Length: 113
Image 1 (cartoon, rainbow, N blue to C red):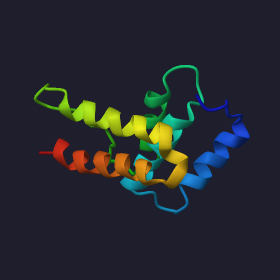
Image 2: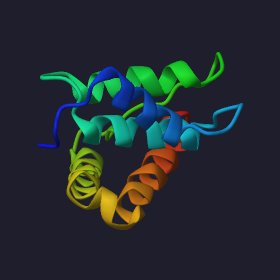
Image 3: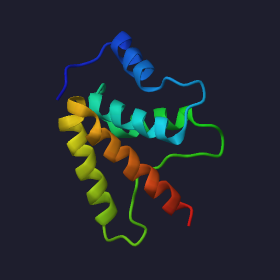
Image 4: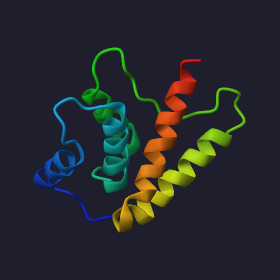
């Protein structure tokens, strides 16, 4: 687990992740991954991260954690595998974080169908 973040470090993490004036779903997904990975709380880090990510988005746009509507669990398993890789490798080159962001965005479109 990464070292605990104080409020200043947490704000810096958010500011470094969300740089534009009009955050996009990709920005929100990236914030979700970065906050979840930082583990700033003892419990509920992914739940808090998805709430923070959604707070960035305009009304009518909601980012969801990918899930399998048919219940097989395959989508969740792949998402959690990618997220675990981002937890472990996220600082090395960003590709692991990018993979989670791309997966989340691909499954947002699927949710509306």
